[in-house]
Image (cartoon, rainbow over all chains, first blue to last red; front, side, top):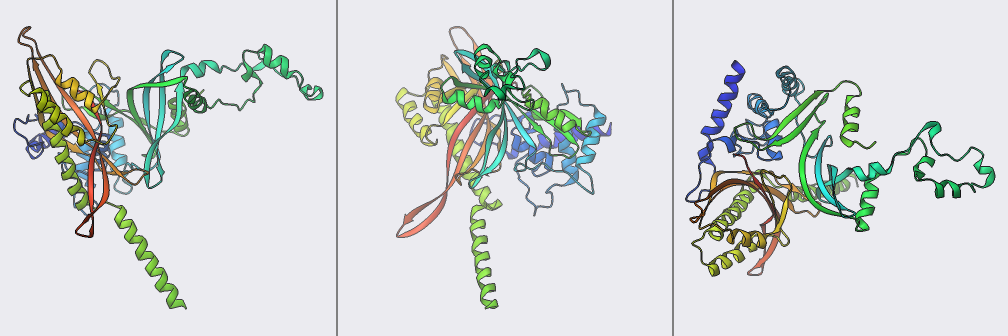
Length: 279
Length: 191
């Protein structure tokens, strides 16, 4: 009950602060508070998460400001940074997460420049005359005088279909004495096999990004458009969360946490494997 | 010898700090840049309202389009998506304005919400800074013949590039911060 009151009070504070903003020209439309409440940019998600801006978002707080990373301010923000309408994050798990983040002894913050967060970008490419979806996993890296987004991995179904290496006694193989024949049987292996990947080591994993770039250089792949975006965060120790953009009526909109997982041993690797979907 | 070494190290350190300080934008400087960037965004919003208005003469709309184009870095694009499809349609800035001017309504009213959001400035590999300003636009178009009235609210995320430049005034070199607009992401909102 107290929590609902707190959230309402927080939204009211956002709404009552609206007149201070605006393009200021004549005929300006007054926001009823919904746009002010919305987490409009991922940058605002970072600032709200860390408690580094005023409730209405008009003032950026710096380390010398008294309200910089203020705990009650952060608590208010964290409560409204979750998708409270469609995602299945339980209130209990959410509270545990907020307690971890606001820990008095070891508070946690997000850092734009630090590794441990990824963008998952849904794109459309033309591949051999057909529109195909490609998912780019991107991350921030330092370069030159600043930073840049770079492609870490690509998930592209036509390439995945291309590599389906059989295993065990069902696969083609080069027999263990092939070396005695100077590997002359490579000719039969490669000519007769539709699955040349059969002759690779167990540890072999195709580098889809290399093939993707090669096909682009050969003009076989042409970028069409972006069709979706979400973010994955592993920066809070022991936790994973996903941030999605919610474009809908109401106050609970913009970039919000849509999925939250408490990580046990090995869970991070499992989730990363799932995100990368490279196998 | 030892004193000389300390002096040299001290000089080297202070020089490095001076360079670092130059590279970082102080909160006060950031606020000044924000104001400058916001002025450009206000100009853009004013120009969009004029270009879209059916009361604007063709020649005047073209003149305003020229002014609006000057706000943007070369090759800037508008990326537009709607509620129905998240896929982005790309337009060159000029083409976007021309499409806006040619919309088939008898009355068009473009207004702006009294809210905006200004991101932090991040440094790119080339040393320039980049930021994003978010504003919201309300569009109302009326067709007298069909009596159709169309309304939408779009979110506009506008890239700003910030660069330190130099100019000569009366033989003196003056440094100043210049702001250019870049790509704009236009999203139809459900608000």
